[in-house]
Image 1 (spheres, rainbow, N blue to C red):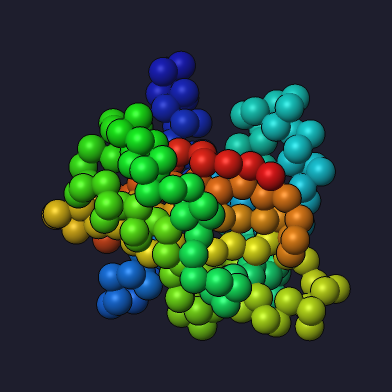
Image 2 (image 1 turned 135 degrees about the vertical axis):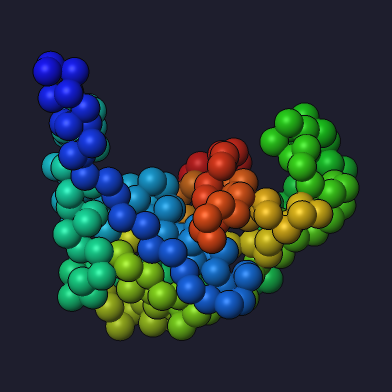
Length: 219
């Protein structure tokens, strides 16, 4: 009886809803699926409008933090009137911060992290795509927890809540086209500090899931 009760409690735990992109364009779908996960897991809790509350919970009660964050996430899911703004920086320049090192340095970096990159093609192809900024635009996103705007509109919405400014690299696919790499740069506000990372994704049940990530730098 005790075991059954425990199972019922476990099974009743609320799960964080996913927003699976229905785009027929592979790249657009991948960027949407990726951003759906970046918002709750990489961009902090700004999208929920209760960052200080969740910061405190994270420190003092990890289980309650997960429970409350999941509940808050699901409450804004598909409710655009509750969305904060995420800005896409697709206009600043054509290169990503991954391109700041020399080709030789980047090849050595990939060789040092060979386990992370092992499913992908040769180093020059990886460096080329991760160094080029994607040209994806705000109107190509259809998210369930945030409104996406181009960075050019930033000054028109200064009084609205925001999730920050992000840009993506071009996508590196493995030979099967079921795994991918993307460089992501995120700043909490325009011209504020941020961090960037390379994300490894896999296509599973029609959803590009984050499989692993490697932090590149923070500022």
